[in-house]
Image (cartoon, rainbow, N blue to C red):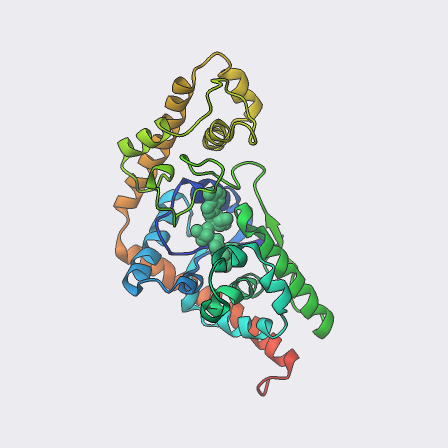
Amino acid sequence: MKLKRLLSGIKPTGELHIGHYIGAIKRFIEMQKDYESFVFVADLHSLTVNPNPKEIRENTRKIVELYIACGLDPKHTILFNQSENIYHTALSWALTCHSYMGELSRMTQYKDKSDGQKNESINCGLFNYPVLMAADILIYDTDVVPVGDDQKQHVELTRTLAERFNNRYGKTFKVPKPVIAKKGARIMDLQTPTKKMSKSDENKKGVINLLEDLEVARKKIMSAVTDSESIIKYDEKNKPGISNLMTIYACLTNKEIKEIEEDFKDSSYKDFKEKVADEVVILLKDIQKKYNEIKTDYIDNILNEGLIKVKEISKNKVLEVYKKLGLGRY
Ligand code: AMP
Ligand code: TRP
């Protein structure tokens, strides 16, 4: 039986944190055996913030190393760098010409990132960002896209663009589905638990990176902001801090929230935080051990192999699209 296709990616801006692990990478790992998986580094997407070239190059490699250290297995998952497969941008242009200003300007991420800037100086990449993301997805006839909840809207736009193109030119693209975890799709900042844990955050006390020093990580959990009620109960609205820690614990131990409430009904916040910190430290220790053993050649071989496979698939899709659009001499 032909496996369904999974695809997802992460931008190489900033350090990967436990939110990335829980909301995205852990899902890729759990799903990789049941899908034909494609996981990449979205370096073209990171250009939207005009980052330092040296930083991008280093971070791109680091993300691939972390993918592997976390448990992505090149036997099951094709790994590659987005910019090395030039066909993504080729499809992106065709899709741009079928996207509307209105729908792109309604994207929450665009509204957040362009907030406060004058139209004059918002770079067009930020606006077009979801179209490139749609190209990443549609070029491989992807069935499922596991992402954290901030990316759901972009996958929904991808569905709209696929349907629009199919209606105009005949069936060309598969219409993909976002896969958002029931828990862990939005890990919150430990110091401000009403906002998403984010790599661009200046308050580093609220974010635990995957390569964080283990003792520092423990301290960050122990000093996570909670309420004064001292009851371990899941209530996102009134008790966002403890609910976030419960989500982290639930995801790392594969336990249900109800079970955790029951197990810790007589515990203090301090005791519970210690247990959460233990789990986080076990996770980071394991990832860091594998990360430190990875060799440069190994990564290059995997990326080279991945690139050959993805280029072949995506070239065919771009030719199909161009032919339907009347471009070139196909
Ligand atoms: P990005 O850093 O924006 O490239 O995110 C890569 C993936 O990680 C996307 O699927 C995001 O939705 C997911 N992600 C990022 N931050 C978090 C978070 N705090 N909680 C859960 N998922 C997240
Ligand atoms: N935009 C995604 C993010 O910021 C990264 C990304 C780019 C992506 N292309 C993708 C995720 C395709 C899933 C599928 O997290």
